[in-house]
Length: 142
Ligand code: SF4
Ligand code: SF4
Image (cartoon, rainbow, N blue to C red):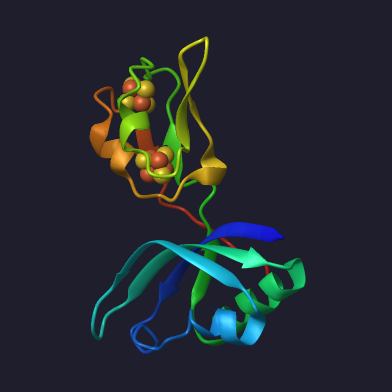
C-alpha cells in the first residue's frame, strides 16, 4: 500500500465540485482529510493522506491535475529549529498525528515530518518559537 500526504489547491471554478470523492470511485484510492478550507465562490485548500497502489495514486493525482487542481507535497512545510527547541514537550501534547513525540529515555522531542498534517498547532503552542512554516510547496512531477 502506497500512502502519501498531499496538498490540494482548488481554483474558484472547481472548489465546489466533489472532485476528491472521485478518487475513491474512479481510482480505488482511500483518503483521509487532515485539514480543509473551502468557501463558496473562493479558492479551496485541503491537506489529505492518499492511499492505494502506486499506479492508482499516480492516476488519481493526474486526474486531480486535469481538473485544474494544483497538487503539491508538504514535506518541507513545517520545520523545527533545533537551536531554539528546549525539549519542553508542550508541542507533543497538541500534535494530533504524533509527528512530534518524546524519545525516551533521552527525553528529546523529535519531529517526524512524514506524519505532519500541517495543522500548525505546534507553532501556536511552542513557547520558544522553534516551530515554523515554509511557504513553498514542491509541486508533484506527474
Ligand atoms: S514546544 Fe517548542 S520548545 Fe517545546 S519541545 Fe516543542 S518545539 Fe521544542
Ligand atoms: S503542524 Fe505541528 S502539531 Fe500539526 S501535525 Fe505537524 S508537527 Fe504536529
